Image 1 (cartoon, one colour):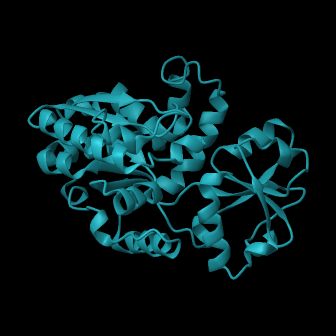
Image 2 (tube, helix red, strand yellow):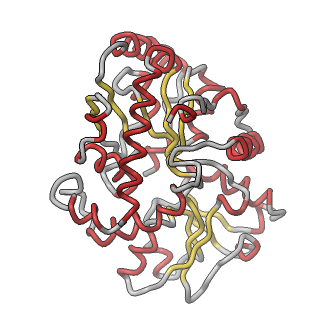
Length: 324
């Protein structure tokens, strides 16, 4: 999962990809075809798009939607730069860092998760329920989340040296064995794995403790946005319909997709039901799925700037959402 949050680090790659992205934007103009690059392998994190495809919501909008699965070697932003995809699901930190340090011409046009599902997970038998309780404990953190965790500690007045931070590779086995006190992981997923080991997990979100960023942000190039605004509105409308339908009953579609979209993933259907259910309150919002309020955008900008990523309001475009 580390690679899903990484990004091409050379200016040469960004420059070459930008030309490809421009070509893609021009070639797509006036057509009804659109491709979307997911951030990871097929699981419940992306089930709303599978529902929209199966139920014909994209076709009803006149779109020919192509879903591109992600994986450990797939970098969503690179898919945009290379012209492989018109739309990508990313995280604000990687996208905005690409904008500010590499000159990538991206716009964030929606947010699937209002709150990032990343959090601190511990065992109920040795619970860590607050940031303050991390003092004196061993916390396993993926390298990609180190900056976010450092920001959370600083915001909450905890010295970095007060917490023993060790590397984490998204495997809760050391936590289950008692070798560490907590992990930073998807709180919508890893507690299920811990439960399979006969343990019960407790968790809290980084978002609720100062790391106020979206997740699975919908990103396009500025060129594609300029050439295809009506198409993107239709894509957002159909995708929102897919998510709304899915979240009516989080247990329904994981069962239906067991032998199709989820075939061969190695995940139990119960795991995808667990994740789909846990994702629901992080995705739904009274303003409609994908919405980005001015308060939410300001919170993203504020946190990102606090960790040295110079975000600003201009990197978020809410005009498409206003058309839904």
